[in-house]
Length: 360
Image (cartoon, rainbow, N blue to C red):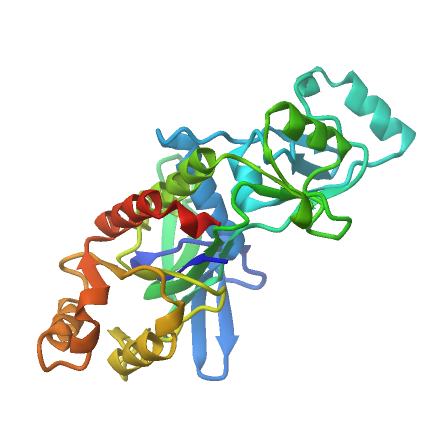
């Protein structure tokens, strides 16, 4: 099986991209904090994987790449999508779990809800492990959290104090896409693998999906699968989102990304970017060389490096020098493509179209 395996950096110069909410015991009642990991060596701001996936979903839904989003249904304290990966691209690539309540009042409420007219009937639990996986985005080094105090004073009477936190750092995250799983839907009786129930199996037959009997799966056409995968990476290339954008506007598109098509799901690039002694991002040339050497037989594509000019220019110069004749990475120069992140994702999309066998 083949995977798109990558990492990305988000430059957060003065940001509060994922907020904690109010902080008990703060000097003002409405102090808003940021999410952090508290470790022995300091405080690390982070953006949760849930938040990142929300950014990506919203970007895909607002883009013009043909993304078909699943409707969402609410049932008291439970919400879920239609859980139909045959029709909806986010159910396919981002996974789902749907376990309908069998209580009489819940069944009657669903039957009376006119907004469910186009809902895919669901009697038993269906689940799908997300083919697209993403880590928590964590600061590459401990950061100082800034407390920003302000007041609302555009009214008569005493001003109202308020306070919030923000930080300056670089966030690093990992991602992986299981290409074989994209557009391939299992009906195995196993948690996470029963993507299709009897109703959805009948729909798969009606729409002429390929039956992979040995895998107990149905599969979309190669063209449909490629269309969905390519849209996902268009979304990453144009990523938008983040909290506190009114006060701390931050571009969350990747400032630096490193990825490739690999035979296995293990992440080969997780340690090629880290922090130097000053807590600033640096590319670990020896780690990159080791990864390219050890995993040479598992690389199916070039290594795509998307790097925005003006961001860590000295580090980029180090990489470019290492790729020149006599440099540490000279033996891999023909396997590494350095360009803008958006161009890197476009090159991946073009290569996926040239190599549809990667999906199989």
